[in-house]
Length: 368
Ligand code: FES
Ligand SMILES: [Fe+2]
Image 1 (cartoon, helix red, strand yellow):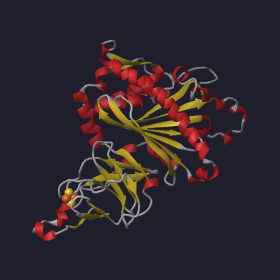
Image 2 (tube, protein in one colour; image 1 turned 60 degrees about the horizontal axis):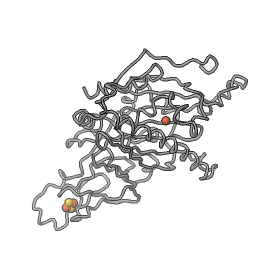
Image 3 (cartoon, rainbow, N blue to C red; image 1 turned 135 degrees about the vertical axis):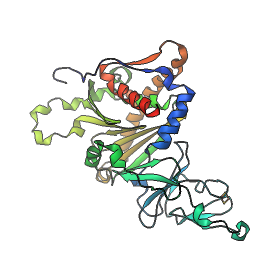
Image 4 (cartoon, rainbow, N blue to C red; image 1 turned 30 degrees about the horizontal axis):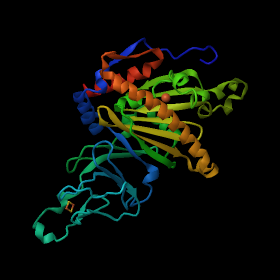
């Protein structure tokens, strides 16, 4: 494509109605279906290596607590005390937990979620402890990522989640990147005044790089040279870096895609992974209101790379990406404001914006 200056063409124009980005009924359905019934990335293996490690996650709108038991098993619960509903863990993350003790009246739960202690228990008569454990959630840990389905399971319902079945053809790629041992370098929330899907849209084409990012990331890339593939409800795409030039003179055995492209994955419904030479960026977009979202921007790094590169190197990488996000979300917030203006009834996606058409089709089908 670089040689012939061609583009990865699509099926022609596609569209999505602009009201899908602000209509409150549509928003409600997206939350109820996509953020309650689908597997959502809420944590990383690097945060939950040892028994007693835990992570609290509230961004889906459900209070989620993920922890590793002394048996090594990762479990997820609703972070809700079965007495009167207080959060049983108030810290965002931590280690060496033996039990979760509710700060309100001191009820305690072990790492498997069992209610093990009721303070002044006699006052609760014959309350059945066994049926007052923390409510469990479906959870899966694979490829260094932790997915949870944020809806309470019924007693006795199976908590395991067939994440490979969900990822389908993507499992080959993700097992190839082999992120199980990677460390979380950093993780920060960004809160744009944009619909959560509009946040994902900013990742789905390279067309805008030349115009919106001339002083940040564009100099690294060829102009709009990218390939896109739909993989079930997920997608992958790769964006060519300028270092690709001259690669034909190098022996083929030395070619590594990560040196000359960023490889992107969309994990339906709300996560984008970006693989570069030596790290992975993880971007998860969560709905707050129809017009607001919170995007968690995390950087995962292989330990052998972290050991040999100084913190200033990683910080420069994170800062460059963050600077591009400021540009993306600056323009995105104008789009969100303009949706209700009456100028456009639909968003228009050109041939090489086909990933946007695929993505919005997937969302529409899921909520239909
Ligand atoms: S609400 Fe947790 S012990 Fe009362
Ligand atoms: Fe961008």
